[in-house]
Length: 66
Image 1: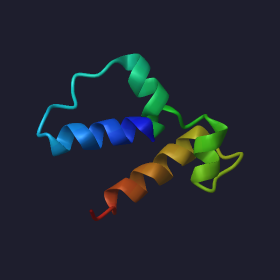
Image 2 (image 1 turned 90 degrees about the vertical axis):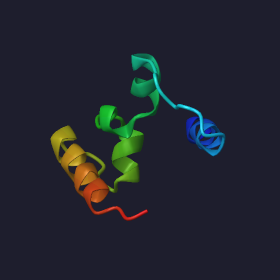
Image 3 (image 1 turned 90 degrees about the horizontal axis):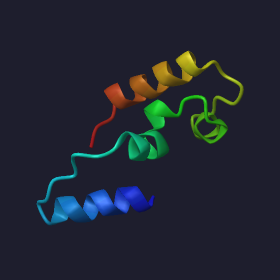
Image 4 (image 1 turned 30 degrees about the horizontal axis):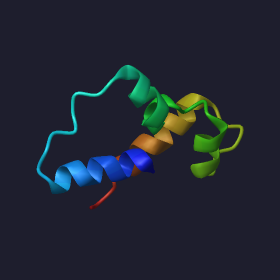
């Protein structure tokens, strides 16, 4: 949540949100955390295969309308 707020603040100021680091992405990017139990739980997929979690997350992203 802290990262989301930081990015929102930077965008509001019309500043770049990149570059970033691999460490920060590993900590905050849910697509890189598909094996994390908290990500699986948030997706409603406890115990699911990481590939299934990734595919479901990608499908949700594909149909997301801002």
